[in-house]
Image (tube, rainbow, N blue to C red; front, side, top):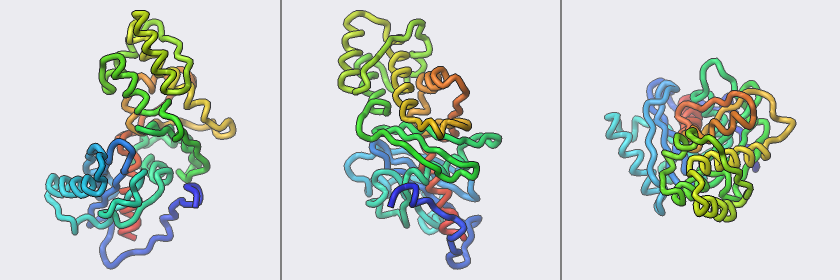
Length: 284
C-alpha cells in the first residue's frame, strides 16, 4: 500500500469505551533516522515536545521518552489514551498502539502547526536523511508527494557535513550564511562531490559565510527541482529540522520569489500529526 492509499479517514474511527479525547493525553512518536521526536497533546493542543537521539535502541529511547513526559507532566502511562508512531522506525516501536505513514502524519500535523489564517498547498519537509514535498488539497488531504531518499544532498546530513568542514555547528550555519555578501556557486548535486568542492573553496580562502550561503542556495535549487509543475500552486510551509535553519528558509524564498512560512514546532510536525491522529483514534 502506498502512502497515498494509506491516508487516514478519521471519520471512520469508532469510540473506544467511554473515554473521550478531552479526558486523555495523546502521544505521537516520530522515529526519524537521526532523532526520535515526541509530541504530547491534550484537547488537540500541544502540551509538550521532546527529542532524543535515535541511537541503536529505538524501543529503549521510546520508553525513556514516555517515562520522561509522564514525569514532567505528573501523569501516568494510563493517562495517555493512545500512542501513534510514524517515521522510519514506526513499525518497531513497541510502546505505540499503532503506526501511520509519515506522509499522512505530516499532512495532519500542519492542521496544528500552520498559522491559523494560512492553508498550505505544499509542505517542504527537510529531515536528517531525506527531503519531501507533500501536496495538499483545501482539506489537508494528501494529493501527491515527491521524496529524495537516495542521496544525502538536500538533507540535514548534508548540512552537518558542510558545517564540520567549516568548523562550525549546524545550529549556527543559518545565521552565518545571512551575513554573506557574495554567495558561492556550488554546482555539485552529490554530497561527496559537494564536500570536495567546499574543501577546495576553503583552500582558496573563500569566506565561509559565502560558502554557507552558496550551500543553502544549492540545496534549495535541488529540492525545487523535485517539485511537480502541476502542483506548484498554493502557499508553502516548511517543516522538519531543516526548517529551523534561517539560511535555507531565505534561500527558498529567494529562489521561489514568494513567501515561505515555517511551521510552529517544525521539527515535531510529524509527531504532532501522529498525536492528532491518536486523539481521533482513541477518542472517537
